[in-house]
Length: 104
Image (cartoon, rainbow, N blue to C red; front, side):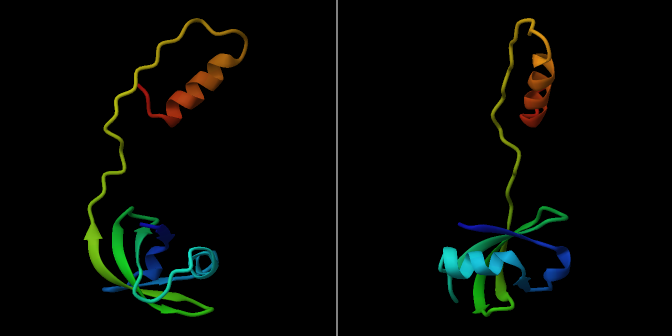
């Protein structure tokens, strides 16, 4: 399912309006139309919704919220990193990549 991110102001009780660059992507790249189901995420809270597209126009795409999805975005995979003593500035890269992977 395709996932799009919106601002909280674009979400009402049972309707979501998609604006901006995503309109072109939905219409012309993915070629979605009324009746297709997409996943929409609130940028601020991270809440996910399964939505049915109800209107496709040049200015906006309206979607009806079908259900709120319960996703756990955190991976359940445990990663252990073992390393030797790095040369020069390699330690910074190791710390950076470890942080991105949320290693402890």
